[in-house]
Amino acid sequence: ARLSRALLAEGAEVAAFLEVDPRKIGGEKRGRPVVSWDEGFRRWPGHFVLAAVGSREARAGIGDALNARGLREGEDYLFTA
Image (tube, rainbow, N blue to C red; front, side, top):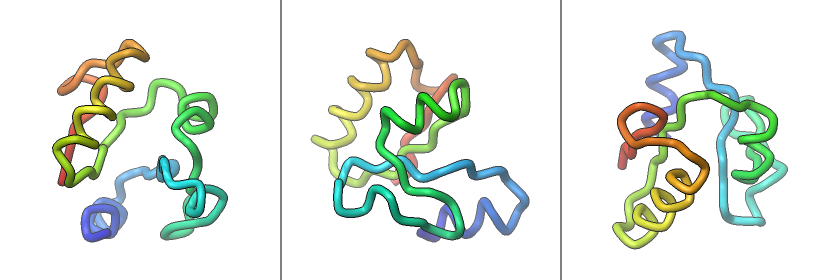
C-alpha cells in the first residue's frame, strides 16, 4: 500500500494491480482496476511488473509464473516486499 502511494505521488504510471485472490479481483485500488494476472498481461503487455509479495513461498511461485511467461527478474519485474 505504501509503495503504490509513493509511486503515484512521484508521478509513476500505475496501470493496474494484479491479484490472485478472487475476492479482490474486479475491485479498484487507488483508482486503478484490480485484475487477474491473465487479464493484466492481456490488457497491458510489456509493462514492467512490481510484485509486492511478502511470503517466500508465494514469491517463488509468482517468480516461476512470471518466468514461464518469458519475463526475467530485474529486466521485466522486481519483487518489492
